[in-house]
Image (cartoon, rainbow, N blue to C red; front, side, top):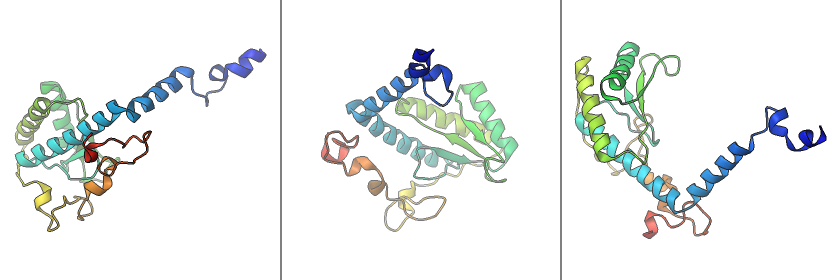
Length: 192
């Protein structure tokens, strides 16, 4: 009993984490701190920028935010759910419909989250499929230029606060830390 009490916290207390979860978390941190993690973060940022620009070009109502999540504003709960359902049913794209009460009425959106593992071909197919369903449900495509051309400073503007977003100042990899153990060390900015 003493051994279980002293060394089996995961079996007794629900607040302690099991060793497998802790090992997984530790391994994830090790990957993210290394070259693989830097490469994944770089690819993730590139994919988000690529997909966002393609959605703007085709005219889907993508919202420009500083997040890796790209909201696509629909504004109607049934239409939002219908687009989400059709994307998975017909094309195999899982995109979450975000409806009230998660967002205010009239702010219903699709939640798109590209990963570093999506290819340009996959993202191009997604944009094509979203645009097709977008028009089928009666929504208008309104192509627009990249947000960077909308701001006099040349910086993309946040669709929420309407102020310039300075990604170069916000992204850690642009101004890498010089400490060898820092996840941002050896980033794009210094040519690694």
